[in-house]
Amino acid sequence: MTNPTAPTPPKVAIIGGGPAGLGTAIALGQAGLAYTLYEAKPAISEIGNGISVQRNTWRMLEALGASRNLTRDKLFRAPSGHDLEHRNGHTGALVATNDADPLAPPHQQHARVHRAHLQQALLRQVDASRIRTAHKLVSVSTLPSGRLRLAFANGFEDEVDLLVGADGIRSVRRPSPPPLTPPQVVRAHAFPDHKIAYAGATSYRTLVPATSAALVNGLPDASTFWHGTDRKWVYSCPLGPHLEITTSIKEADDGQRGSWGRRSSVAAFRAAFAEMCQPVQELLRLATFVEQYDYFAGPRLESVVQPGIALVGDASHPLSGAFGAGAGFALEDAWTLGQSVRWASAKGLPLDTALALFDAVRSPHYADLYAVLDGYRAADADVAAARLPPAGEIKAVVERNWSDRTRWMLVYEVDAVFAREIARHEAEVRKGAGEGGTVSQRNGNGHGLTGAAVVESERQLNGDDLDSRTRPGHDLPDALHAVRVA
Ligand SMILES: Cc1cc2nc3c(=O)[nH]c(=O)nc-3n(C[C@H](O)[C@H](O)[C@H](O)COP(=O)(O)OP(=O)(O)OC[C@H]3O[C@@H](n4cnc5c(N)ncnc54)[C@H](O)[C@@H]3O)c2cc1C
Image 1 (cartoon, rainbow, N blue to C red):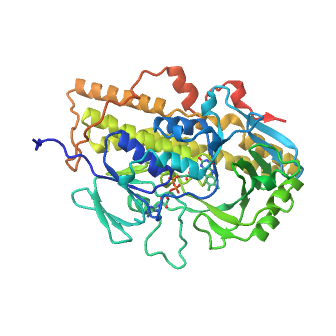
Image 2 (cartoon, helix red, strand yellow; image 1 turned 45 degrees about the vertical axis):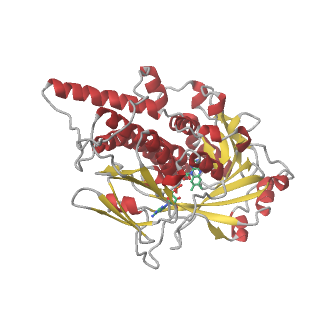
Image 3 (cartoon, rainbow, N blue to C red; image 1 turned 60 degrees about the horizontal axis):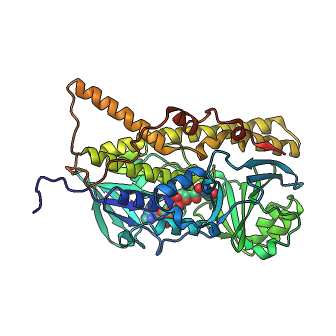
Protein backbone atom coordinates (compact mmCIF):
# COMPACT_ATOMS: atom_id res chain seq x y z
CA MET A 1 0.00 0.00 0.00
CA THR A 2 1.32 3.45 -0.83
CA ASN A 3 1.72 5.99 1.90
CA PRO A 4 -0.06 9.21 0.82
CA THR A 5 2.02 11.30 3.24
CA ALA A 6 5.39 10.02 2.02
CA PRO A 7 7.35 12.75 0.22
CA THR A 8 7.48 12.47 -3.56
CA PRO A 9 11.01 11.89 -4.79
CA PRO A 10 12.27 14.91 -6.73
CA LYS A 11 12.43 14.64 -10.49
CA VAL A 12 15.88 15.46 -11.81
CA ALA A 13 17.27 16.45 -15.22
CA ILE A 14 20.98 16.61 -16.00
CA ILE A 15 21.90 18.63 -19.09
CA GLY A 16 25.10 17.47 -20.79
CA GLY A 17 26.97 14.18 -21.15
CA GLY A 18 30.55 15.39 -20.54
CA PRO A 19 32.57 14.47 -17.43
CA ALA A 20 30.37 16.72 -15.25
CA GLY A 21 27.06 15.29 -16.50
CA LEU A 22 28.15 11.65 -16.43
CA GLY A 23 29.78 12.07 -13.02
CA THR A 24 26.60 13.68 -11.68
CA ALA A 25 24.50 10.84 -13.09
CA ILE A 26 26.64 8.30 -11.23
CA ALA A 27 26.66 10.32 -8.02
CA LEU A 28 22.90 10.92 -8.02
CA GLY A 29 22.34 7.24 -8.84
CA GLN A 30 24.51 6.34 -5.84
CA ALA A 31 22.32 8.69 -3.76
CA GLY A 32 19.24 6.75 -4.85
CA LEU A 33 17.78 9.49 -7.05
CA ALA A 34 16.06 8.93 -10.39
CA TYR A 35 17.27 11.29 -13.11
CA THR A 36 17.28 11.77 -16.87
CA LEU A 37 20.48 12.88 -18.61
CA TYR A 38 19.88 14.91 -21.77
CA GLU A 39 22.70 15.29 -24.29
CA ALA A 40 22.50 17.47 -27.42
CA LYS A 41 24.73 15.27 -29.56
CA PRO A 42 23.37 12.16 -31.24
CA ALA A 43 25.67 10.03 -29.07
CA ILE A 44 27.78 10.40 -25.94
CA SER A 45 31.07 11.12 -27.66
CA GLU A 46 34.34 12.92 -27.06
CA ILE A 47 36.94 14.82 -29.03
CA GLY A 48 39.96 12.78 -30.15
CA ASN A 49 42.58 14.05 -27.79
CA GLY A 50 44.24 13.56 -24.41
CA ILE A 51 43.42 14.65 -20.90
CA SER A 52 45.49 14.67 -17.72
CA VAL A 53 44.19 12.68 -14.80
CA GLN A 54 45.57 14.07 -11.56
CA ARG A 55 45.35 12.68 -8.06
CA ASN A 56 42.15 14.54 -7.20
CA THR A 57 40.58 13.17 -10.38
CA TRP A 58 41.63 9.62 -9.53
CA ARG A 59 40.08 9.93 -6.09
CA MET A 60 36.76 11.00 -7.62
CA LEU A 61 36.92 8.27 -10.28
CA GLU A 62 37.40 5.78 -7.45
CA ALA A 63 34.50 7.21 -5.44
CA LEU A 64 32.28 7.00 -8.53
CA GLY A 65 33.39 3.43 -9.27
CA ALA A 66 34.81 4.39 -12.68
CA SER A 67 38.55 4.04 -12.06
CA ARG A 68 38.33 0.27 -12.51
CA ASN A 69 37.39 0.90 -16.16
CA LEU A 70 40.64 2.78 -16.80
CA THR A 71 43.06 -0.09 -17.06
CA ARG A 72 46.82 0.50 -17.17
CA ASP A 73 47.05 -0.12 -20.92
CA LYS A 74 44.96 3.06 -21.42
CA LEU A 75 47.30 5.30 -19.38
CA PHE A 76 50.55 7.05 -20.22
CA ARG A 77 53.04 7.60 -17.41
CA ALA A 78 56.57 8.67 -18.32
CA PRO A 79 59.27 6.07 -17.62
CA SER A 80 61.37 8.86 -16.02
CA GLY A 81 58.76 9.28 -13.27
CA HIS A 82 58.27 12.95 -14.16
CA ASP A 83 54.68 14.14 -14.41
CA LEU A 84 55.84 16.90 -16.75
CA GLU A 85 58.98 18.07 -18.49
CA HIS A 86 59.35 21.76 -19.27
CA ARG A 87 61.69 22.52 -22.18
CA ASN A 88 62.85 25.67 -23.82
CA GLY A 89 60.88 25.40 -27.07
CA HIS A 90 63.54 27.36 -28.97
CA THR A 91 66.54 25.23 -27.96
CA GLY A 92 64.98 21.98 -26.67
CA ALA A 93 66.94 22.33 -23.40
CA LEU A 94 65.30 20.93 -20.27
CA VAL A 95 64.29 23.83 -17.99
CA ALA A 96 62.46 22.03 -15.17
CA THR A 97 60.41 19.00 -14.25
CA ASN A 98 57.32 18.39 -12.15
CA ASP A 99 58.04 15.13 -10.38
CA ALA A 100 55.62 12.43 -9.28
CA ASP A 101 53.72 13.15 -6.07
CA PRO A 102 55.70 11.40 -3.30
CA LEU A 103 52.57 11.22 -1.14
CA ALA A 104 50.33 9.61 -3.76
CA PRO A 105 50.01 5.83 -4.08
CA PRO A 106 51.05 4.46 -7.50
CA HIS A 107 47.47 4.10 -8.79
CA GLN A 108 46.75 7.77 -8.06
CA GLN A 109 49.78 9.17 -9.84
CA HIS A 110 49.32 11.59 -12.72
CA ALA A 111 48.49 9.92 -16.05
CA ARG A 112 47.56 11.03 -19.54
CA VAL A 113 44.58 9.27 -21.06
CA HIS A 114 42.53 9.57 -24.23
CA ARG A 115 39.39 11.60 -23.52
CA ALA A 116 37.22 8.89 -25.03
CA HIS A 117 38.61 6.32 -22.55
CA LEU A 118 37.80 8.62 -19.63
CA GLN A 119 34.33 9.20 -21.00
CA GLN A 120 33.72 5.47 -21.53
CA ALA A 121 34.98 4.74 -18.01
CA LEU A 122 32.30 7.07 -16.62
CA LEU A 123 29.62 6.03 -19.10
CA ARG A 124 29.93 2.37 -18.08
CA GLN A 125 28.82 3.33 -14.55
CA VAL A 126 25.72 5.19 -15.76
CA ASP A 127 22.32 3.55 -16.18
CA ALA A 128 21.99 3.75 -20.00
CA SER A 129 18.19 3.70 -19.80
CA ARG A 130 18.31 7.17 -18.22
CA ILE A 131 20.24 8.82 -21.08
CA ARG A 132 18.43 10.72 -23.86
CA THR A 133 20.78 11.72 -26.69
CA ALA A 134 19.83 14.11 -29.50
CA HIS A 135 17.98 16.19 -26.89
CA LYS A 136 19.28 19.72 -27.05
CA LEU A 137 17.88 21.94 -24.32
CA VAL A 138 16.76 25.29 -25.77
CA SER A 139 14.86 26.96 -22.94
CA VAL A 140 14.13 26.84 -19.24
CA SER A 141 11.30 28.54 -17.41
CA THR A 142 10.43 28.60 -13.74
CA LEU A 143 6.80 27.73 -13.05
CA PRO A 144 4.78 29.36 -10.27
CA SER A 145 5.09 26.07 -8.35
CA GLY A 146 8.88 26.47 -8.37
CA ARG A 147 9.32 23.54 -10.75
CA LEU A 148 11.37 24.05 -13.89
CA ARG A 149 9.99 23.50 -17.37
CA LEU A 150 12.49 22.39 -19.99
CA ALA A 151 11.99 22.65 -23.75
CA PHE A 152 14.19 20.78 -26.21
CA ALA A 153 14.99 21.49 -29.86
CA ASN A 154 13.16 18.33 -30.95
CA GLY A 155 9.91 19.51 -29.35
CA PHE A 156 10.19 17.33 -26.25
CA GLU A 157 9.31 18.94 -22.91
CA ASP A 158 9.98 17.96 -19.32
CA GLU A 159 9.20 19.39 -15.90
CA VAL A 160 11.62 18.83 -13.03
CA ASP A 161 12.37 19.73 -9.41
CA LEU A 162 16.14 19.72 -9.78
CA LEU A 163 17.96 20.88 -12.91
CA VAL A 164 21.70 20.20 -13.13
CA GLY A 165 23.50 22.36 -15.69
CA ALA A 166 26.43 20.31 -16.99
CA ASP A 167 26.39 21.83 -20.45
CA GLY A 168 29.99 23.10 -20.42
CA ILE A 169 31.32 26.05 -22.39
CA ARG A 170 32.54 24.27 -25.48
CA SER A 171 29.63 25.20 -27.74
CA VAL A 172 29.89 28.96 -27.60
CA ARG A 173 28.17 30.73 -30.47
CA ARG A 174 29.02 34.16 -31.77
CA PRO A 175 26.28 36.71 -32.39
CA SER A 176 26.73 36.58 -36.17
CA PRO A 177 24.10 35.53 -37.13
CA PRO A 178 22.38 36.17 -33.80
CA PRO A 179 21.57 32.86 -32.07
CA LEU A 180 17.92 32.04 -31.54
CA THR A 181 18.76 30.58 -28.17
CA PRO A 182 21.70 31.46 -25.94
CA PRO A 183 24.39 28.83 -25.40
CA GLN A 184 24.77 27.45 -21.86
CA VAL A 185 21.02 27.48 -21.49
CA VAL A 186 20.91 26.52 -17.83
CA ARG A 187 23.41 29.17 -16.73
CA ALA A 188 21.65 31.78 -18.86
CA HIS A 189 18.42 31.01 -17.00
CA ALA A 190 20.00 30.83 -13.54
CA PHE A 191 22.38 33.78 -13.92
CA PRO A 192 21.17 35.90 -16.87
CA ASP A 193 23.78 38.62 -16.30
CA HIS A 194 26.76 36.27 -16.35
CA LYS A 195 28.57 36.41 -19.68
CA ILE A 196 31.64 34.63 -20.94
CA ALA A 197 33.98 35.95 -23.60
CA TYR A 198 36.91 34.85 -25.73
CA ALA A 199 39.95 34.86 -23.43
CA GLY A 200 42.48 35.99 -26.06
CA ALA A 201 44.20 32.63 -26.52
CA THR A 202 43.54 29.55 -28.62
CA SER A 203 44.60 25.93 -28.47
CA TYR A 204 45.31 24.01 -31.66
CA ARG A 205 45.35 20.24 -31.30
CA THR A 206 46.20 17.26 -33.46
CA LEU A 207 47.24 13.61 -33.30
CA VAL A 208 50.08 12.07 -35.29
CA PRO A 209 50.95 8.37 -35.61
CA ALA A 210 53.16 7.15 -32.76
CA THR A 211 55.26 5.13 -35.22
CA SER A 212 56.15 8.31 -37.16
CA ALA A 213 56.76 10.32 -33.97
CA ALA A 214 59.16 7.62 -32.77
CA LEU A 215 61.46 8.60 -35.66
CA VAL A 216 61.71 12.24 -34.52
CA ASN A 217 65.18 12.97 -33.18
CA GLY A 218 65.32 14.43 -29.68
CA LEU A 219 61.70 13.75 -28.75
CA PRO A 220 61.51 12.64 -25.09
CA ASP A 221 59.24 9.77 -24.04
CA ALA A 222 57.45 12.14 -21.73
CA SER A 223 54.61 14.54 -21.17
CA THR A 224 56.45 17.63 -22.42
CA PHE A 225 55.77 21.35 -22.57
CA TRP A 226 57.91 23.18 -25.15
CA HIS A 227 57.74 26.77 -23.96
CA GLY A 228 58.09 29.77 -26.24
CA THR A 229 57.77 33.45 -25.38
CA ASP A 230 54.57 35.46 -24.83
CA ARG A 231 52.83 32.41 -23.23
CA LYS A 232 53.15 30.35 -26.39
CA TRP A 233 53.68 26.61 -25.90
CA VAL A 234 53.50 23.24 -27.60
CA TYR A 235 52.67 20.13 -25.57
CA SER A 236 53.50 16.62 -26.78
CA CYS A 237 52.60 13.31 -25.16
CA PRO A 238 52.31 9.68 -26.25
CA LEU A 239 48.66 8.62 -26.46
CA GLY A 240 48.35 4.93 -27.38
CA PRO A 241 48.77 4.51 -31.15
CA HIS A 242 49.17 8.28 -31.48
CA LEU A 243 51.22 11.12 -30.17
CA GLU A 244 49.15 14.07 -29.04
CA ILE A 245 50.12 17.64 -29.89
CA THR A 246 48.32 20.43 -28.06
CA THR A 247 49.36 24.08 -28.33
CA SER A 248 48.47 27.44 -26.87
CA ILE A 249 48.97 30.79 -28.53
CA LYS A 250 47.66 34.30 -27.96
CA GLU A 251 45.40 35.43 -30.79
CA ALA A 252 43.24 38.50 -31.22
CA ASP A 253 39.47 38.17 -31.40
CA ASP A 254 38.65 38.06 -35.12
CA GLY A 255 34.92 37.82 -34.47
CA GLN A 256 34.92 34.15 -35.49
CA ARG A 257 35.81 32.58 -32.15
CA GLY A 258 33.49 29.76 -31.18
CA SER A 259 32.89 26.09 -30.58
CA TRP A 260 35.53 23.50 -29.73
CA GLY A 261 37.02 21.27 -32.38
CA ARG A 262 36.57 23.21 -35.64
CA ARG A 263 39.01 22.20 -38.38
CA SER A 264 41.75 24.73 -39.02
CA SER A 265 44.59 25.27 -41.50
CA VAL A 266 47.55 22.90 -41.07
CA ALA A 267 49.89 25.34 -42.88
CA ALA A 268 48.94 28.22 -40.58
CA PHE A 269 49.39 25.93 -37.56
CA ARG A 270 52.96 25.05 -38.60
CA ALA A 271 53.78 28.68 -39.41
CA ALA A 272 52.57 29.86 -35.99
CA PHE A 273 55.28 27.79 -34.27
CA ALA A 274 58.05 28.23 -36.87
CA GLU A 275 60.54 29.48 -34.28
CA MET A 276 60.34 26.26 -32.26
CA CYS A 277 63.25 23.79 -32.19
CA GLN A 278 63.86 20.91 -34.60
CA PRO A 279 61.97 18.09 -32.78
CA VAL A 280 58.87 20.30 -32.54
CA GLN A 281 59.15 21.29 -36.21
CA GLU A 282 59.44 17.63 -37.20
CA LEU A 283 56.40 16.75 -35.13
CA LEU A 284 54.28 19.55 -36.60
CA ARG A 285 55.25 18.41 -40.10
CA LEU A 286 53.55 15.06 -39.31
CA ALA A 287 50.18 16.74 -38.74
CA THR A 288 47.52 16.07 -41.37
CA PHE A 289 44.67 17.85 -39.59
CA VAL A 290 44.30 20.50 -36.90
CA GLU A 291 41.41 21.33 -34.60
CA GLN A 292 40.88 24.70 -32.99
CA TYR A 293 39.79 25.28 -29.37
CA ASP A 294 39.27 28.94 -28.55
CA TYR A 295 39.52 29.56 -24.81
CA PHE A 296 36.48 31.21 -23.27
CA ALA A 297 36.28 32.50 -19.73
CA GLY A 298 34.09 34.63 -17.54
CA PRO A 299 33.97 36.23 -14.12
CA ARG A 300 33.58 33.97 -11.13
CA LEU A 301 30.06 33.19 -10.10
CA GLU A 302 29.70 33.96 -6.40
CA SER A 303 27.31 31.04 -6.11
CA VAL A 304 26.71 28.03 -8.37
CA VAL A 305 23.13 27.34 -7.29
CA GLN A 306 19.70 28.88 -7.64
CA PRO A 307 16.42 27.44 -6.32
CA GLY A 308 16.13 24.01 -7.92
CA ILE A 309 19.27 24.51 -10.06
CA ALA A 310 22.90 23.45 -9.65
CA LEU A 311 25.70 24.19 -12.10
CA VAL A 312 28.52 21.67 -12.36
CA GLY A 313 31.75 21.42 -14.37
CA ASP A 314 32.73 24.06 -16.91
CA ALA A 315 29.19 25.49 -16.84
CA SER A 316 29.80 26.60 -13.27
CA HIS A 317 33.39 27.82 -13.54
CA PRO A 318 34.50 28.86 -17.03
CA LEU A 319 38.24 28.71 -16.27
CA SER A 320 39.18 28.34 -19.96
CA GLY A 321 41.21 25.17 -19.44
CA ALA A 322 43.73 27.16 -17.39
CA PHE A 323 44.89 24.34 -15.14
CA GLY A 324 44.44 21.32 -17.41
CA ALA A 325 42.31 19.86 -14.64
CA GLY A 326 38.75 20.89 -15.50
CA ALA A 327 37.48 17.32 -15.74
CA GLY A 328 38.73 16.71 -12.20
CA PHE A 329 36.96 19.82 -10.93
CA ALA A 330 33.82 18.63 -12.74
CA LEU A 331 33.96 15.25 -11.00
CA GLU A 332 34.47 16.95 -7.63
CA ASP A 333 31.32 18.96 -8.34
CA ALA A 334 29.44 15.80 -9.29
CA TRP A 335 30.53 13.85 -6.22
CA THR A 336 29.75 16.77 -3.90
CA LEU A 337 26.28 17.26 -5.36
CA GLY A 338 25.51 13.55 -4.98
CA GLN A 339 26.76 13.50 -1.40
CA SER A 340 24.87 16.68 -0.53
CA VAL A 341 21.61 15.22 -1.81
CA ARG A 342 22.33 11.97 -0.03
CA TRP A 343 23.05 13.71 3.26
CA ALA A 344 19.94 15.90 3.04
CA SER A 345 17.88 12.85 2.18
CA ALA A 346 19.17 10.87 5.14
CA LYS A 347 18.35 13.81 7.42
CA GLY A 348 14.92 14.44 5.85
CA LEU A 349 16.04 17.92 4.84
CA PRO A 350 14.79 19.80 1.77
CA LEU A 351 16.43 19.83 -1.63
CA ASP A 352 17.48 23.46 -1.29
CA THR A 353 19.46 22.57 1.85
CA ALA A 354 21.37 20.05 -0.23
CA LEU A 355 22.05 22.73 -2.85
CA ALA A 356 23.21 25.17 -0.18
CA LEU A 357 25.62 22.56 1.17
CA PHE A 358 26.93 21.85 -2.35
CA ASP A 359 27.46 25.57 -2.87
CA ALA A 360 29.18 26.01 0.50
CA VAL A 361 31.71 23.33 -0.45
CA ARG A 362 32.36 24.31 -4.08
CA SER A 363 32.11 28.10 -4.35
CA PRO A 364 35.01 28.85 -1.96
CA HIS A 365 37.14 26.40 -3.93
CA TYR A 366 36.43 28.27 -7.16
CA ALA A 367 37.35 31.50 -5.39
CA ASP A 368 40.74 29.97 -4.63
CA LEU A 369 41.15 28.79 -8.23
CA TYR A 370 40.30 32.22 -9.62
CA ALA A 371 42.82 33.74 -7.22
CA VAL A 372 45.49 31.52 -8.80
CA LEU A 373 44.45 32.77 -12.24
CA ASP A 374 44.83 36.33 -10.99
CA GLY A 375 48.31 35.39 -9.77
CA TYR A 376 49.20 34.03 -13.21
CA ARG A 377 48.11 37.28 -14.81
CA ALA A 378 50.17 39.32 -12.37
CA ALA A 379 53.19 37.07 -12.96
CA ASP A 380 52.81 37.44 -16.73
CA ALA A 381 52.68 41.22 -16.37
CA ASP A 382 55.84 41.17 -14.20
CA VAL A 383 57.68 38.99 -16.69
CA ALA A 384 56.63 41.21 -19.62
CA ALA A 385 57.70 44.34 -17.73
CA ALA A 386 61.13 42.82 -17.01
CA ARG A 387 61.84 42.57 -20.78
CA LEU A 388 63.95 39.45 -20.31
CA PRO A 389 65.74 37.71 -23.17
CA PRO A 390 63.76 34.67 -24.49
CA ALA A 391 65.60 32.08 -22.37
CA GLY A 392 65.14 34.23 -19.25
CA GLU A 393 61.45 34.79 -19.98
CA ILE A 394 60.84 31.07 -20.48
CA LYS A 395 62.66 30.18 -17.25
CA ALA A 396 60.79 32.88 -15.30
CA VAL A 397 57.39 31.77 -16.62
CA VAL A 398 58.07 28.11 -15.84
CA GLU A 399 59.26 28.89 -12.33
CA ARG A 400 56.37 31.23 -11.53
CA ASN A 401 53.43 29.58 -13.31
CA TRP A 402 54.30 25.89 -13.27
CA SER A 403 55.71 25.64 -9.77
CA ASP A 404 54.26 22.99 -7.51
CA ARG A 405 52.97 25.77 -5.27
CA THR A 406 49.63 25.26 -7.05
CA ARG A 407 49.70 21.48 -6.65
CA TRP A 408 47.24 21.81 -3.76
CA MET A 409 44.41 21.95 -6.30
CA LEU A 410 45.52 18.63 -7.81
CA VAL A 411 45.72 16.82 -4.47
CA TYR A 412 42.63 18.56 -3.07
CA GLU A 413 40.47 16.30 -0.92
CA VAL A 414 36.92 17.44 -1.47
CA ASP A 415 35.60 14.73 0.86
CA ALA A 416 37.51 16.30 3.75
CA VAL A 417 36.06 19.72 2.96
CA PHE A 418 32.61 18.19 2.66
CA ALA A 419 32.92 16.50 6.06
CA ARG A 420 34.06 19.78 7.60
CA GLU A 421 31.07 21.61 6.12
CA ILE A 422 28.68 18.96 7.44
CA ALA A 423 30.22 19.25 10.90
CA ARG A 424 29.83 23.03 10.76
CA HIS A 425 26.19 22.76 9.63
CA GLU A 426 25.33 20.22 12.30
CA ALA A 427 26.92 22.33 15.01
CA GLU A 428 24.75 25.23 13.86
CA VAL A 429 21.62 23.06 13.86
CA ARG A 430 22.42 21.82 17.38
CA LYS A 431 22.93 25.39 18.52
CA GLY A 432 19.66 26.43 16.83
CA ALA A 433 17.78 23.50 18.41
CA GLY A 434 19.21 24.48 21.79
CA GLU A 435 17.75 27.93 21.21
CA GLY A 436 14.35 26.48 20.25
CA GLY A 437 14.90 26.46 16.47
CA THR A 438 13.43 23.88 14.08
CA VAL A 439 14.68 22.22 10.93
CA SER A 440 12.46 22.22 7.88
CA GLN A 441 11.62 18.76 6.55
CA ARG A 442 10.30 19.69 3.13
CA ASN A 443 11.33 22.04 0.38
CA GLY A 444 9.25 24.75 -1.24
CA ASN A 445 7.87 22.33 -3.86
CA GLY A 446 6.67 19.89 -1.24
CA HIS A 447 9.28 17.38 -2.35
CA GLY A 448 11.22 15.63 0.36
CA LEU A 449 14.33 13.65 -0.49
CA THR A 450 13.98 9.92 -0.16
CA GLY A 451 15.73 6.65 -0.08
CA ALA A 452 19.43 7.11 0.55
CA ALA A 453 21.91 5.72 3.00
CA VAL A 454 23.83 7.77 5.51
CA VAL A 455 26.69 9.70 3.97
CA GLU A 456 29.91 7.71 4.09
CA SER A 457 31.92 10.88 4.20
CA GLU A 458 30.63 11.77 7.64
CA ARG A 459 33.69 10.12 9.00
CA GLN A 460 36.11 11.53 11.47
CA LEU A 461 38.91 13.25 9.64
CA ASN A 462 42.22 14.23 11.02
CA GLY A 463 42.43 18.01 11.32
CA ASP A 464 46.00 18.03 10.00
CA ASP A 465 44.80 16.25 6.88
CA LEU A 466 42.28 19.00 6.29
CA ASP A 467 44.96 21.63 6.50
CA SER A 468 47.56 19.90 4.44
CA ARG A 469 45.52 18.62 1.51
CA THR A 470 42.69 21.05 1.04
CA ARG A 471 43.91 24.58 1.43
CA PRO A 472 45.91 26.71 -0.98
CA GLY A 473 49.21 27.92 0.33
CA HIS A 474 49.39 25.18 2.94
CA ASP A 475 52.67 23.70 4.11
CA LEU A 476 53.32 20.90 1.69
CA PRO A 477 56.53 18.97 2.11
CA ASP A 478 59.42 20.66 0.28
CA ALA A 479 59.43 17.91 -2.32
CA LEU A 480 56.01 19.06 -3.41
CA HIS A 481 56.70 22.76 -3.36
CA ALA A 482 59.43 23.58 -5.80
CA VAL A 483 59.38 22.86 -9.47
CA ARG A 484 62.65 20.99 -9.99
CA VAL A 485 64.89 23.23 -12.02
CA ALA A 486 67.16 21.40 -14.43
C1 LIG B 1 42.79 22.67 -24.80
C2 LIG B 1 42.19 22.13 -23.52
C3 LIG B 1 42.90 21.19 -22.79
C4 LIG B 1 42.36 20.66 -21.59
N1 LIG B 1 43.07 19.74 -20.90
C5 LIG B 1 42.56 19.20 -19.78
C6 LIG B 1 43.28 18.19 -19.04
O1 LIG B 1 44.38 17.80 -19.40
N2 LIG B 1 42.70 17.68 -17.91
C7 LIG B 1 41.47 18.10 -17.49
O2 LIG B 1 40.98 17.59 -16.46
N3 LIG B 1 40.76 19.05 -18.15
C8 LIG B 1 41.28 19.60 -19.29
N4 LIG B 1 40.58 20.54 -19.96
C9 LIG B 1 39.28 20.99 -19.42
C10 LIG B 1 38.21 19.92 -19.66
O3 LIG B 1 38.16 19.57 -21.01
C11 LIG B 1 36.85 20.49 -19.24
O4 LIG B 1 36.98 21.11 -17.98
C12 LIG B 1 35.81 19.36 -19.15
O5 LIG B 1 35.56 18.83 -20.42
C13 LIG B 1 34.52 19.93 -18.57
O6 LIG B 1 33.53 18.94 -18.58
P1 LIG B 1 31.98 19.35 -18.61
O7 LIG B 1 31.25 18.07 -18.54
O8 LIG B 1 31.73 20.41 -17.65
O9 LIG B 1 31.78 20.03 -20.05
P2 LIG B 1 31.92 19.41 -21.48
O10 LIG B 1 32.97 18.36 -21.50
O11 LIG B 1 32.06 20.55 -22.40
O12 LIG B 1 30.52 18.68 -21.74
C14 LIG B 1 29.34 19.43 -21.93
C15 LIG B 1 28.33 18.54 -22.63
O13 LIG B 1 27.08 19.22 -22.65
C16 LIG B 1 26.50 19.06 -23.94
N5 LIG B 1 25.59 20.20 -24.14
C17 LIG B 1 25.93 21.50 -24.33
N6 LIG B 1 24.83 22.26 -24.48
C18 LIG B 1 23.76 21.41 -24.38
C19 LIG B 1 22.35 21.59 -24.46
N7 LIG B 1 21.82 22.81 -24.66
N8 LIG B 1 21.53 20.50 -24.32
C20 LIG B 1 22.06 19.27 -24.10
N9 LIG B 1 23.40 19.04 -24.03
C21 LIG B 1 24.24 20.10 -24.17
C22 LIG B 1 27.70 19.07 -24.89
O14 LIG B 1 27.36 18.48 -26.13
C23 LIG B 1 28.71 18.26 -24.09
O15 LIG B 1 28.59 16.87 -24.33
C24 LIG B 1 41.09 21.10 -21.15
C25 LIG B 1 40.38 22.04 -21.89
C26 LIG B 1 40.92 22.56 -23.06
C27 LIG B 1 40.15 23.57 -23.85
